[in-house]
Image (cartoon, rainbow, N blue to C red; front, side):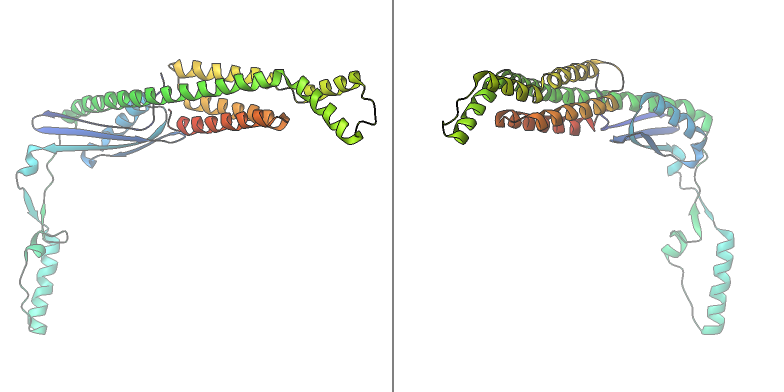
Length: 293
C-alpha cells in the first residue's frame, strides 16, 4: 500500500530510574536523510537507532530527538568550577587592591552559564537504557508507519479519482478521433470550394485520399493505448507493497510524453482542450506523488 513521507510520532517509556522518550518527524525528500539528536551519555547507541530507522523507513527526511531523564536529574547535585573560581577570585582581589572596587557576587555570577557553580549531570547506565531505548524507538516507529499508511491511503484515493478523470478524457478524445476522416473530408471540400468559388469540379476520390492522409498523420490511437497501459501500471503500483514514489514519478513522465504527442498531432480544438485537462490532472498527480515514499 502507498505510504506518505509526512508523519509525526512520539513514544515514552519509564523504568525507574529512567524515562526515555523518542520523537520522530518525517518530511518529503528524494532519499533517506536521518537527523538524530540524542544525549551524549548514550551516543554509543546512535548507530543502533539509525539502523532501526533505516530498516523501517526507505525514503524521506527523518528528524529524531531522543531524551533520557533520570530521577537523579532533580537531586540538585552541583559542584564548584574550581579553576574558574580561583581565576575570578584573583581578579576580584586585583580590583579591590588596585582600583578601590568591591564587586559583590550575584546569582548569575554563581549559577549562570558562565558562573562558578555548575550542575553535575547524573551518570547514566547505558546498558540499562539500551533496552528501554530500543522499545521506545520501536513504539515511535510503529506510530510513524501507521500515520504514513493513513496519509498514504488518503493520497491513493485522491490519485484514483484523478486517474479516472484522465480515463474519461481519453474516452472523449477517442470518440472524437474516430470521426476525424469525415471531419477532414468536409473541411477539405469546404476549403477547396471557397478557393475555387465553384469553378473547378472537385474529385471526391482525391478529397477522400487527402482526408485519409491527414487523418493518418494526426492519428493518436497508439498514444491512447500507451496512456491506458500507463494508467493500469500506475494503479498496480498503488496497490503493491513496494516503495512506489520513484516508479510513479517515471510513469507520470511517460504520461506527459503521450499527452504532448497528442497535443502536437491534434487539429481539433475539442481534442486539444481534453488533452490540456488531462495534462492538468497529471500535474496534480505529480504533486501528490512527491509526498509518497
